[in-house]
Amino acid sequence: AVARPPGVPAAAAAAAAISSMSPPSIGRLERRLVSLGETLSLEVAPGDVGPYAHTGKKKKGLLDLLAEEPSPGCSLPSHAVVYVNMVKAFYTHFDEVAAAVAALSAAGLMPVPHLPAARFSSPSQVGEQMRAMVRAGAADFLVVGGNDLRERVEANECCYKGGASALLEQERGRWHDLGTTGATVAGHPEGLPALGFCPSATAAVLAGKVRPLLEAGIDVTIVTQFCFDANKLLKWLARTRRDMAALEAELPRSGAAAGAGGASGRCGRTRFRIGLPGPAPRKKLEKIAYICEVDPLFIKPAFSLLDTESDGLVGLGQLEEFSDTLGLPRGAVRALHARHASGDGALGRAQFNALLAEAAARPALAPRSAAPPPDAAG
Image 1 (tube, rainbow, N blue to C red):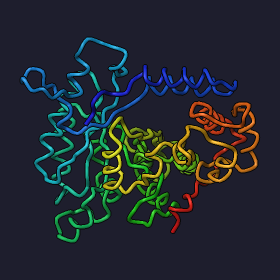
Image 2 (cartoon, one colour):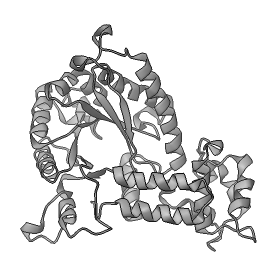
Image 3 (tube, rainbow, N blue to C red):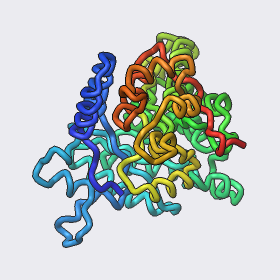
Image 4 (cartoon, rainbow, N blue to C red):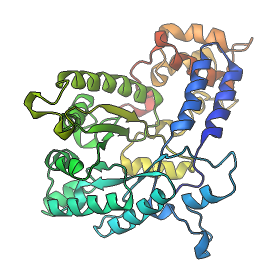
């Protein structure tokens, strides 16, 4: 549940904290954090949308929070994208999703409902729900497979045996029919569990989803599964940006070749939205990570992993020991330590965070492939 949507002030506060630690390169990171606050999106469950104020319930939904007197802690950019997930595994739950979409649209937001392939036993159901969502104000659809896809296919209750890829391939014409020029698909920085988390196989599945949409002139947003490992996320993003740029370059520049470009006469383009876990108790994050099969290692702050003596300090030896886990190039660890450590060689939490921020911001210190710590191997 969304307790309070993270907004610009949170990003600005983080930027100010980083700026105060300052090497000069951190200014760029500060600007990016402010930009993040201005372009952020949210994901909510249908039951967390509201408004509930008129019902007498104590529960507050997202729209209740936004309707309160504006404050620095509760704001969203104009026309912010709000993803509406489908948390219940039965078809009639789409009615609740559509109601949430209508409420968000009426509030001036841009709702994007999830469209799980596992929920559909016939193509006509897809058309029915897409039309209902567009009437309610849906700006786009996030097409996913669904956690129970395999079970539904084996029970012959799902007509899309290839999951989201099959739905997108077979139903892409509906986007044009409905006047919707964009589609959203899921990216998986840690790899797809069904493919053994294999990066190359996961990349091939993503390309297979994106290509037919681009060919049809549909712009594609790739929104990632949340990931606690920043270095793994950055590595995936750099690689996937290259892959998508190469894919776009392969497609014809106009719709003349091979009938590509759909009715618009142009091929689509890709963009990214990066999923981050919202403010929630650690136990809840661990539970969600288990359900989504996401590595929970960095739910615990990285500083705590290195602060083995629990004295609030980290030394050069600990940095070198965990350099692979943190994605720090070993040849740069000593120089980073020398720039950020105090006179006695110790790093407090703020100094440690500034060191990681500098490493992430400098191209020369591009993160390496993160490796698991010794106790997580095998």
